[in-house]
Amino acid sequence: MKTKRFQIDAIPAVLHGEPANKGYLFLHGQMGCKEGAENWAEENA
Image (spheres, helix red, strand yellow):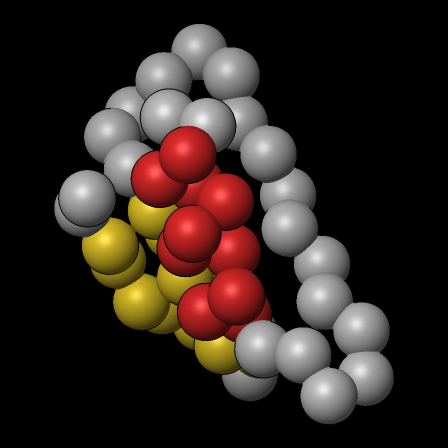
């Protein structure tokens, strides 16, 4: 799966997958991490 790491202002972000008409925003809570969305993205691509 294609992964792109970037920043929105000073906030680190990760984009998983190919360009599409539909997207999802994955937010994590305390003790989570942005990389936690990768498994979900692979299963729901």
